[in-house]
Length: 116
Length: 110
Image (tube, rainbow over all chains, first blue to last red; front, side):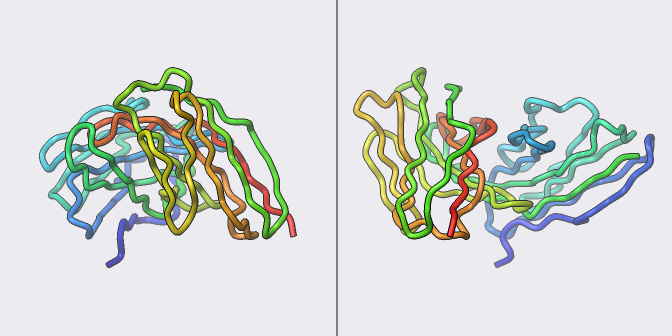
């Protein structure tokens, strides 16, 4: 049981390049999330997926797209990377028993992205 | 979602109890209080949550005031490995967004 896994661990991009961050969970969770964390800041939600086939914008969605490929996988794509997207990206998943039910999110180890 | 207020930092001696405060004066009746922590460079880790009653698990205890406007996370015997940023979050639960603020940096000294 690996929990939440993310690839790659590190990436350096040039401005304008594109890339996809991969996330997978093996806990059969319904909900998955993408966050970014900048130095000295808390985590900010980019996008989330409450269930397979659905995605919703979070606090900072501009410049990103997501795909909930199946129940296990949730990818984050940067179509044209900008230096402002230099950050650490965390994926998370939760069982999401239902509205107003307690929810524990489990986080992956993060992807460190540098855009030059 | 209700906002939370935490001091930016605190420290405690190894082996002593660490009491981390959090104010959430605008919390709604259906919102849970969650605590997560983030050890340097790692993903956040769930610690504990509560609605109205005090809660305890193998990691910590959560004390929520009767009016639910504040809470305290207690690490009963802090170790050096407990040095981390601790986030207090209030949320209605599943299908709602967890909003992470800046948290409180706990430094455990030898």
